[in-house]
Length: 196
Image (tube, rainbow, N blue to C red; front, side, top):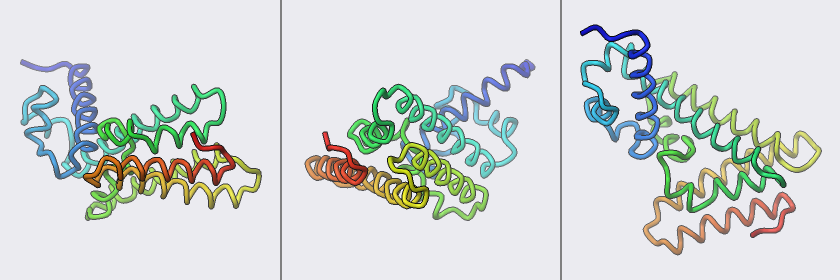
């Protein structure tokens, strides 16, 4: 039975959404095409009718993950009535973000995969992700001097991503919370905010 173009497009979005979540939960190499298609409720053969190659698919799925997490972060920031930078830090460097990698930031889950990848398109897209987050941070970073804001944004992004990665990898829950709390407090203090 022939599938309509609309259904093909819906299936494509379903596969990308599923991959965006599963890649962030398990890593790019952590799920095969057959299991991914099964999780999306589709047949394995449908994959190659939807995507040119696995490498192209991976970049598209990472792009979808970035779009999803960026939208979530922007909504959290815009919902904040006070300080957008503090709201971002409180969300990003949190147990909630740590415990939900499937809906979290791609940098904290997939950057290592991209660094090891031979695919220049994937590595290039991660450069775009870093630039996008730096632009966001510069826009909401307290202060007036553009050079200082850029330096602070680079440091903040590096600390936030590193804190989430380390908090996920340590087996001791107390140490995990300590990492998150210390980095969040330091970032807020550096931006002249009182820690929670």
